Image 1 (tube, rainbow, N blue to C red):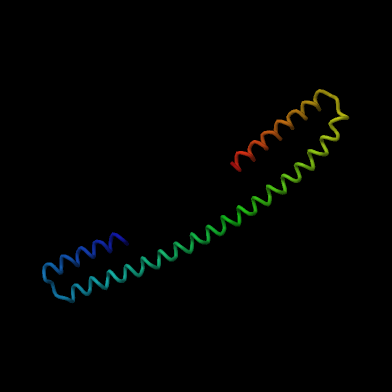
Image 2: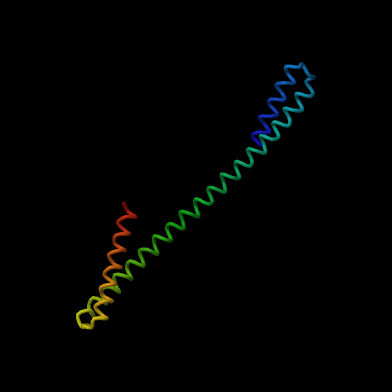
Length: 117
């Protein structure tokens, strides 16, 4: 639409330079005004859609933050329970599982630090 408006303004300038009747110039002005009005409506609709998308994005971020907090609390609770039982389990398989758990915990902590920084 913007290009159409530019083209019509060029046509209008040409008509004025050629000394064309005012009716033709008025007709071009009417078309330009009509396109400018439609363009304004489209820009308003686009702005409203973007505002809606931004609101939805912010709500999703808040839900994600809440879920991350809940997950962290549950993980801490689970880790505490596992740590208590770790002392009583002496098998190599159990110790390997605890070792893997420690690596996962470290990776999660590193990821949290990187996402904050």
